[in-house]
Amino acid sequence: MDGAAGPHKVKQRRIALVAGDGCSLDPVDQRPPFRRLRPAALWLPALLLVPFLLVPGPAAAAEPVDLELVLAVDVSGSVDQDEARLQRDGYVAAITDPQVIDAVRGGLHGRIAVAYVEWAGYHHRRLVVDWHPVHDRASAEAFARRLAAAPVATGVSTSISGAIAFALPLFGSGGFQGLRRVIDISGDGPNNDGPEVTGARDRALALGVTINGLPILNQRPNVAGFPNLDDLDAYYDGCVIGGPGAFMVVAQGFDTFAAAIRRKLILEIAARPPPAQVVPVRATQGARPAADAQGAYAQGCDIGERQLRQYLRGRGGMVD
Image (cartoon, rainbow, N blue to C red):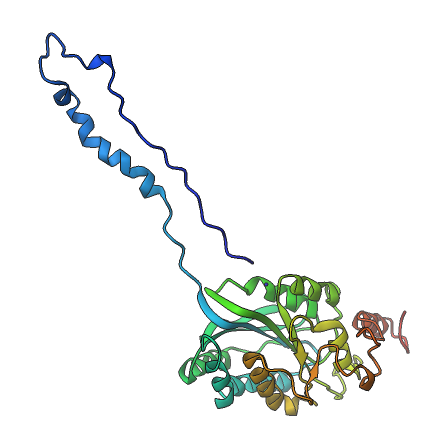
């Protein structure tokens, strides 16, 4: 999330000329005193200007936008090249969708700033497209062209905590000041690398950053044999998303991803209350048995780490 630096204060010294008794005329040099002080008259004005020259000029003002949005997209080992491309194409299509552009233009400032990040393990985090203003179709298409032209590189492991840690310093770094700051995380598995996801989430919330989610329910067998998490939507609700107005949109596989991200962007940009088919944070507790009455995830937010230990040890069943 990085407040603006306060104004610099530069102390200014006042220079005073004091005329003392030594101003009497010299018996040899009968020129008046002001003539003998004439050299000082040449450099004194310049000296008086020095403090003003040292005062720093005003910093360039950040451009106001309705939303600073980091799109953080999973390219871990469970996402093959075809699926990674489906995700990328989904964002390219969504950002240029007329309804998304209408949502942008309907804001107070009529513009947003977007950055696009791809992530896998804790040390696989890449800024694919740096902060880019979107305020009309032309600017949206410019962002889409940059995104479409960038290569897709997948990695191993899944570090949602790493994605959050990477995204946070981006806010405020692009010359924009948003009324809201949001990290939009999409992925098809739980955190299993790096710090615990709840700690990263809580640090983001403490900085005023909202985390929304787009869990992809993917039942396709992993090429490495790593287990899927059947209730990934409940995991995202209990362990990942948070902050004012946080919500998630569930994609039923990669084939529906494009429609899901389009709907999610409209909701995110317009800051609309989530409709019934979208799962808001801590909502519908009774309808989703994996979450208890306090909104915690019943299997524990470290389930991804436990799944990884189980996988590495070659055991059946869960590892406590």
